[in-house]
Length: 383
Image: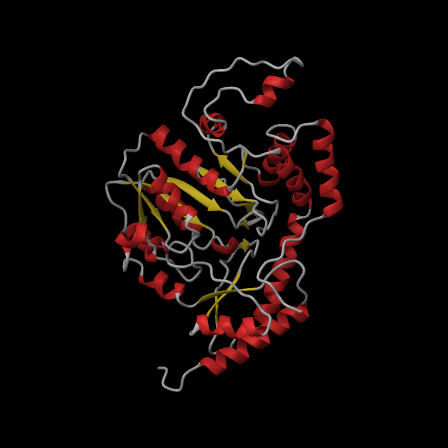
């Protein structure tokens, strides 16, 4: 049987029951379930504000937009970020006419604090930290540097729903944290996300911007007093980024199982490590100490990565690559060569299949094939 990289698992009957309530009440948009999920997410994470949006990309854009507005950043100001991430992380910086400045990565494939500090300039306004695969890397050092230099910290926590560092859910240290609930993420819906600001004024502005700058959302105008209040003001040029109750209904169910699902992902990675540790041709990307990671990804570094992918595909195993060095894309080529470690890793990184429907025998099979074909691909003249 084929082994896919990702395969979402839903608690179908419970999800359908929650969705049925939306359909029967005739409320599928923002409000109702979105409010309930925001409250549940705040309780789960202990983050003070949680706003449900239609994607993590929307949440990241709101994060940059709101901070730029409050802190009076100018066009051309800089945000330090990573070249190893999904492009939405860096696109949202460009959306706001700001400049992504790329810093290199560490052994955890997260921002390297030393290179990050070296990339600071008088135009640096913020740092975008990506928790690769649920891994916080040297996040605490990044937090310290941001505080010392009065920089805003945006946490791209797309992979981190359920990640805990020193027994506390990740995110409270940042000015804003953004989570993804896209279909293959640790907490899957079809697509949605959460943006969690640390300040009430940022949260309030984001809620208006999410609904086209309108100062009162449809749900609150309907439920207050029972009659629909049609009059509202448009205070900002906003976006249509709000989440809906169908996605929130699914999320409410999935949240109940998030910790046990993440625990099983960690078990799968333990089995991978048992099989692959000590193999000369395979380097396992480590997890930071003191961390309870979601383990959204299990990543290794191998030579001849692309050839290995083809060999695994022929055996019915379908790994992935997270991610291509963003400085290879045309809009970011101005930074080509500035992050040599990230570029080298980008040529070797491989994400092995990891999802809740896998068993130990699946892990054993994938591991055996990786070892076998990595050995075959090693060229005699390789140094």
